[in-house]
Amino acid sequence: MEDLSLHILDIVENSIRAKASRIEIKVVEDTAKDLLTIEIADNGQGIDAETVKKVLNPFFTTKMTRKVGLGLSLLSQAARESGGDVEIESKVGRGTRVKATFGYSHIDRKPLGNMEATLTTLIVGNPEVDFIYQHKRGELEYRLDTKEIRASIKGEDKSIEGVEQ
Image 1 (spheres, rainbow, N blue to C red):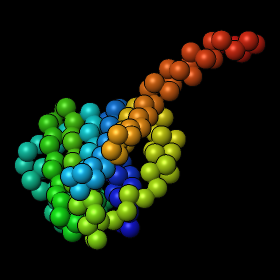
Image 2: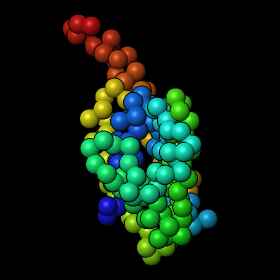
Image 3: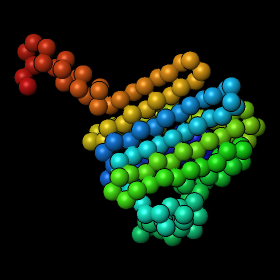
């Protein structure tokens, strides 16, 4: 994977397969600390502690269709190459949180990539999932919440004349 947005897409697809109905994606560019942090948290099925210990191994997967699970191991490798790391927390029945840190100015840090395309793919392809995306860089912060957007659209539909509900 050439950029981090593709790693995010892969991890979020894992969340969707785990039946998550709410997925939070946070990106923090902290130039003062020279860190890029990506955090993905879901309310999916979660995984047990024993499986959490194995998920960074490229030769381990919970998928029945193949014998390798490269997504998390490639993310971990990308983080380590830039002086960062990956942390995974999960509770069965409660969800999973994946946090990856990268050296922001490290020469080997992959670019963030096209987050707009990644988010569009996720939102359009999974309308039943609530996505919250937060991106912070310095004092600037952007937040997108699909649940709020849907509620706003429904509210506006009621005010449009001639449209049947």
